[in-house]
Length: 178
Image (tube, rainbow, N blue to C red; front, side, top):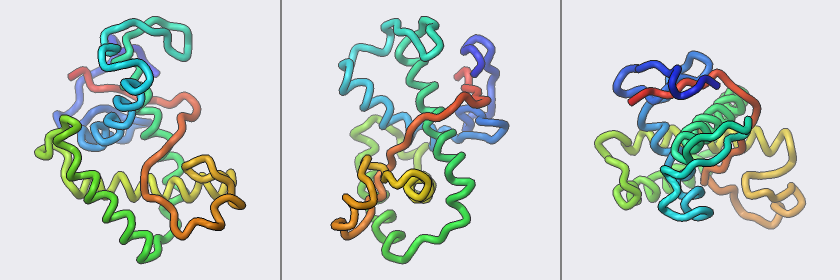
């Protein structure tokens, strides 16, 4: 992953690129809400200008580390999605996913996200990508997004459309300098 100082500018709707593929600002913002909430839950609201050490031992701000973490989540989902796109969703899965996406969309203004940038269609697309990626992850590992194994999920009536991802290996990620 390139240093922040080496990053280049992209189109105004582009947050960056992963392996040459554009990441829209809307998609980046959807993922970054969860990253932001996770960091603030663990370290408090005032962490964003504090220095920390990244995975490679380099000093950086929490803000920059969170941006990298957001891109890593997107990259991980996209990698699983390559296989997930070959799968179909049932009507019930689509119904649950769409309902969850609509509920989440209603909370965006509370999270400080402009609904001028992030549309309901963006949320639905991200939720669908995550849902399909979770199915692939479960098929590969036997562990669902909540960390449960197949045996522990047999009593569940349906899978959740909530997005939970993990970081994987290093990728070719570029951030916008904006």
